[in-house]
Amino acid sequence: EVQLVESGGGLVQAGGSLRLSCAASGFIFDDYDIGWFRQAPGREREGVSCISSGGGRTYYPDSVKGRFTISIDNAKNTVYLQMNSLKAEDTAVYYCVAKPLAYYTDGSKPDYWGQGTQVTVSS
Image 1 (cartoon, rainbow, N blue to C red):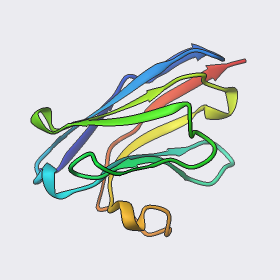
Image 2 (cartoon, rainbow, N blue to C red; image 1 turned 90 degrees about the vertical axis):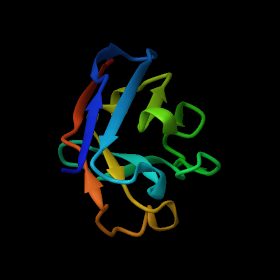
Image 3 (cartoon, rainbow, N blue to C red; image 1 turned 120 degrees about the vertical axis):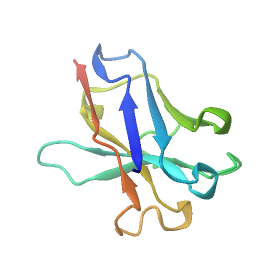
Image 4 (cartoon, rainbow, N blue to C red; image 1 turned 60 degrees about the horizontal axis):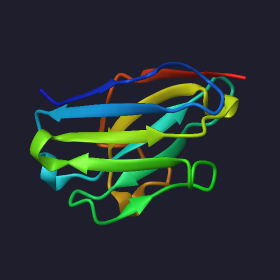
């Protein structure tokens, strides 16, 4: 069974930090690029980061560039998202996904999704 299990969400004040984790199982982790999408009420789903399977390439949209950092631990089949200088507009459910980095923003569905973790930033 394929599983992407997110953790680390919560409530934080604006300007604070959180680190999300995504533990993967049930598929060949090294064969997939892994990333994070977020979905806030009334807003479009947004891809906020992606990292290639070997960790050599990353993607960030302008909305989070310089504030979010994605990293990968292949030995633990885990991807992390360090989020700093959080803003109220970062409030959303964050989903871990397996999707090729080359097609990350083309609107196609990811291969796999996690259940999501809520991040709430109070202003």
